[in-house]
Amino acid sequence: MTASDDVFAALASPPRREVLRLLLDGPRTVSDLASHFDMRRPSLSEHLRVLREAGLVSELKAGRERHYQLEPQPFAELDEWLHPYEKFWRERLRSLRDVLEEM
Image (tube, rainbow, N blue to C red; front, side, top):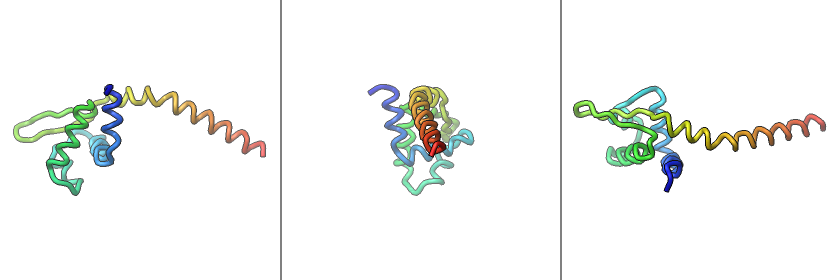
């Protein structure tokens, strides 16, 4: 499995995508993240482990608390991988717009 495979596998889970969304505002503790989910703490810890192993988040231990934050590099790599597909669809939609305008 490549690094990008790990990223896609991590992003396949709705709870993990929600964790990433929550981290957009900045680092959060596990307790804070857990308050947003209806799941047991071990389940959330497993999701965080997958995100950490994919490089999407990092963990900082401060005393008894663990803080998680987004890591930008995998997102940049994902954006680079998706760019040709975005270009493809933009061109297709532009062609569709041209056809519709001619009608």
